[in-house]
Image (cartoon, rainbow over all chains, first blue to last red; front, side, top):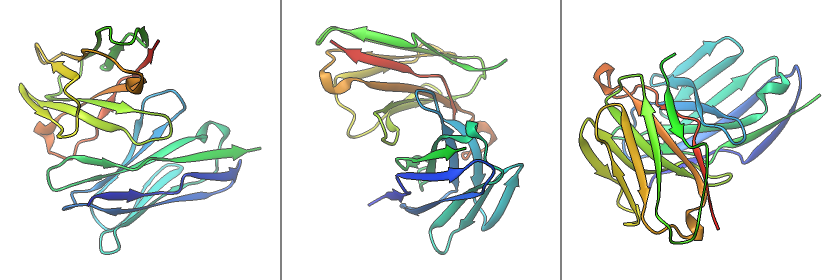
Length: 109
Length: 115
């Protein structure tokens, strides 16, 4: 079967660094997306990885290891506005997105 | 700005009363998606259009129908809403002409409540 696992909830402190992990098992693999979703709003695109390694985009970085079926999203210099859910989605062999349930990130002052 | 627009933002309907949700896009993307998302759950793909080709997910209930009259517009029809259909409905688009791994762009969603 197809499965995406990510922690349900994480808490971090303003100004700190947090790493949100995602493991995936999908039929075929054509890359992995990370989306941010604030409560009651639509998901917004953060990053896409298809090759192994780290992609950096400002305060946010995303890492992929295809051999381990593993990705993480790294958020630096956390701000209160980063409080949101972070969804991991893998692209399967049919180019369909297999979504995780999201990790709710709570930022404390 | 080019965008994906969903109307209405909030929709209330009665149990069993048909309801239509709409989505329009100015991105000129060829693929459009409808998702259902319940609280703290992953978005669930209901169907998608690849140009005019309709693709229904195997587990999408018959109660849900969709229409795409042109590139810009897509509609979700719920023929007889039940209490379990209360959810956020998300419309998304992507442009597969630039490759199949383009990110999906989401509208703000329509939150559907059933009385």
